[in-house]
Image (cartoon, rainbow, N blue to C red; front, top):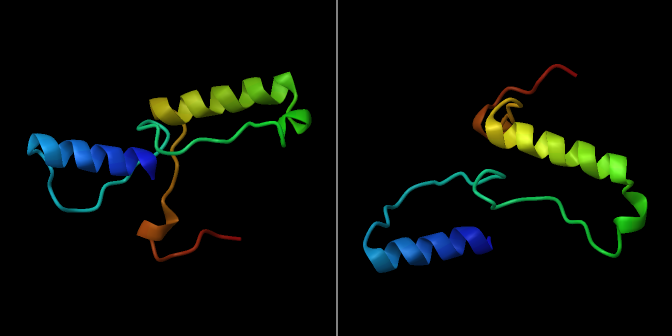
Length: 77
């Protein structure tokens, strides 16, 4: 939320704000995974490396993330 709020206020200040739905994700640094003292012991260096690689592939578009909210049909189980 902090990125969305910051961007909205910045756009309002510079006069470029427009109403509508904005979708923010990894590329816009609006979401990410949390690695902190509580879960650090469960994440191995190899896991962290694989997570970073997957994140980079999502940002680059190599991995497509589907927004199931935008589609009323459920994927096959």
